[in-house]
View 1 (cartoon, rainbow, N blue to C red):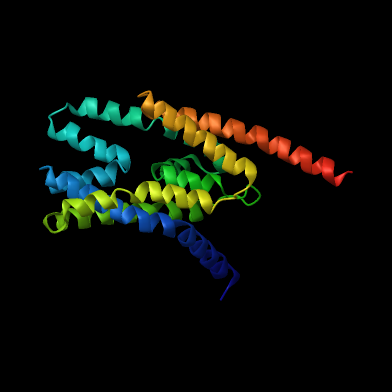
View 2 (view 1 turned 180 degrees about the vertical axis):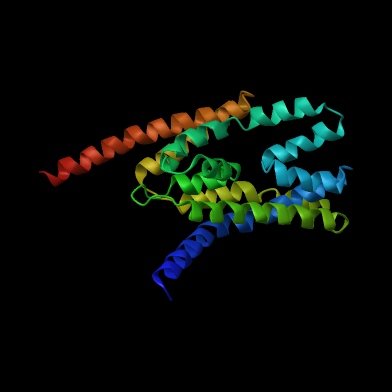
Length: 241
């Protein structure tokens, strides 16, 4: 096996290994979306089209009552954009990691930037650069799982009980918890996650919508950064005593 082939095999293995937890979680959630959408009289073609073009997880479930109630397409688009405002923050956070990429590759990678993809990508070691080959395989294997799950959900609509659809909907928060505990698990990391979660919950109770996620991310990241600096300083003091 040549050096070139070994390198690409390594990238392939790393991308699929990182994507596998998301792939396994996305499929039942997308399947639930397909079942719920078609059960609410949404045309199968439109259900699959939304997953292919929108690829927005929770926002897609929110689109179902809007579409079937006859809300104008412009209103649906604006609502989805407001719900997904946090992706602007994701892009600015990951931007420096992709600064050496050609612009067209950045646009392609940004399409697959979901909450879970951001969680995994942002936790990557900053020493090693993220290559387009890795990122494309990572994000689009997750995307393929979402689209495939939607198609299966549309096809088995009548065969899936409503109670099972409700159970499958818990796969998304379960995935976030799993991603949290397979991360760095240092004190600053866990404190940042806790503060972010508490702020997001408080914002939800105050009916702040997507802004709650943005506020939770900013506050959690700030608290984590401050604690991380204090943590590093304390380690340096101990090492020099």
